[in-house]
Length: 277
View 1 (cartoon, helix red, strand yellow):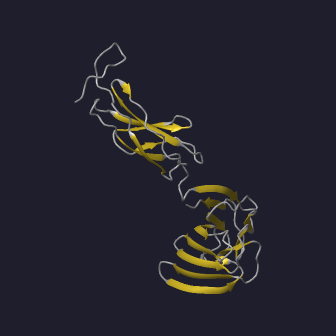
View 2 (spheres, one colour):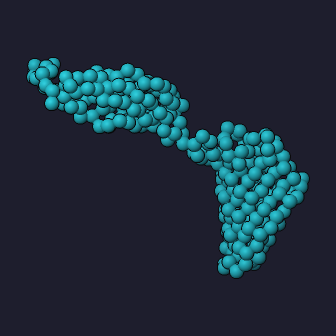
View 3 (cartoon, rainbow, N blue to C red):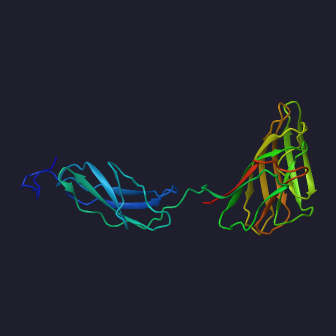
């Protein structure tokens, strides 16, 4: 272990970092507020061992530490560009800083969800639920819903941009537990996102998750995929649906409605935006 460096503290002879680390690359981790910084430790031939290395951001002087490369710096602001320097530290204190790194901008995860809107049906019920003026800033949309209906043949559907024409198609597979069925509907007004309940008129819950893919892409039809299910006191089903809206317009509004009957009080539908990479 090299010695001979004189500490400014009390004139004591002690080991200190002899050389600045060599900076490597700063990389966005695509996890909110985090960047990875690589480095090569400075030589200890004229100094002593380094206990830790610290990466320091510019701006804001936010730090992350590690005994080895790389260093993860957390707590950064998404969308802000940062450079980083690295210093080595031992009992005496910090050694000289490395040169500044390249610029890196932390970002949110590529599959982050933003809540756009939630609609909960009141005591009077509702024949349909609508989302309008949908932002075009996302890659995909997702709808999560729980329907309560007093009508046996609920078969909820979804439409885009107030298109009530027969411009929608579906393929589906569903099972009632006792039977399985597959089929297609090639020219519909709206796409199905659930099958028909053959139960009684008692209010039973129906749940679904629908992905609306590439909803702003104007070079192809808009496609959806849905997983749904219901239980009516033993007479229930699980369903998988895929669908297409045969139109190349960007989706800006969504209508969800029951083929028959209405959505009862406490039915709730939530719309989310999915951010792409």
